[in-house]
Amino acid sequence: MSSVNVIAEIPNKVRSLKKVSFKKVTNNGFQKDVKERVDQFFQTRNISKFANSEMVIKTILILSGWMATYFLILSNLISPWGMLVLAIMHGFFAALIGMNIAHDALHGSFSKNATINKIFGLLFNLVGANDYVWGISHNIVHHTYTNIPHHDEDIHQLPILRMEPTQELWKIHRYQHVYAFFLYCLTTLSWVFKKDYVKFFQHQLGGHYRKTFPKKEIFRLFFYKALYYTLYLVIPLLVINLPWYWIIFGFVMAHFVEGFTLAIIFMLAHIIEDTEYPEPGADGKIDMPWADLQMHTTANFAAKNRAVNYLFGGLNFQIVHHLFPKISHVHYPKIAEIIKQTAKDHQLPFIEHKTFFGAIASHTRVLKKFGAAQI
Image 1 (cartoon, one colour):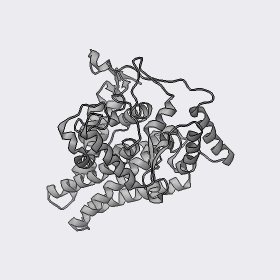
Image 2: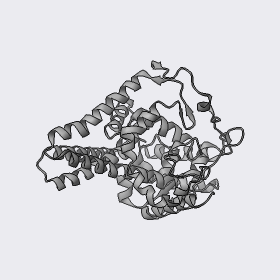
Image 3: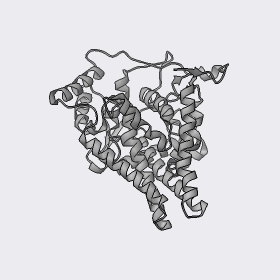
Image 4: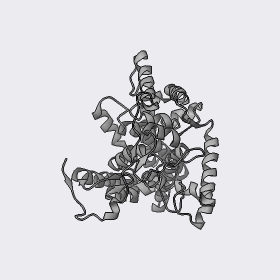
């Protein structure tokens, strides 16, 4: 694939992060053992690791709700307040697309057919984000350097949010457990108008360095952003028989719901009590294998809650997802116990909260702790 060097001379500070490595995997270690046990689960039952009929039905339902709410808003058949409700619902369906369909597809776990994964992965662009940037910042950076300060960009969102103990403490952080939840509502608005552009042209994304940027992806970035602005701003402003400010308000409210839903699920999986923030040694090495790192930095929540399991794309089984991102989330509940037992056998933590609101309370306490004092 052809690429373009956007900046001819790259400042040395861009490359200041030392490359992180992990302890070697051993034949009798957790990483090898858990893989063998999970592989055996699928082999003995002769079932695919990819989407099943349940996932197909879920995909149809989510996409139908997403499209129905969009076209009903454009129809002018609904009252203004009814349209606002539809906009909020549409934002939630957009979040469901991101968590359930596009997320699996971009990890290559929706289907064994790469073309099908690519097609469904494109939906990520239609809910406001860029699939190329996500593929690097999430699939590569976050999954490799989970909760490692300065290497995992997902724990370095905004300077006014202190989410790990090495970050500089500001006075305003004392109140972050209050204002953080409002900022979470702005997540996808940031993706749509700022974050994707900034991250696309960054050479250093956490622990991942890029010297050049693919020309094809530069075109796709601006093409899909233009398509998104057309679908969600230009067409509604031209078609809907309401004042422009009411339409913009509906757009913002949809993103508030979408952004909060996506942000809070991530936070409950990594920024809660008992998760750790390991720092590499002077040689850049983390003193544990990669899979062991996941057990120290990632958490499950609400594993027995059927609604949470169904709606949030299995991301409440975040430990399972981090260890096996190539397996569709519909299988996560079945293999979570295998991982839990294997972790116990290897004397590794298995962090989990029994309820959704219990996890939120834990996240709030962590925000309050990181905002109160230098840890």
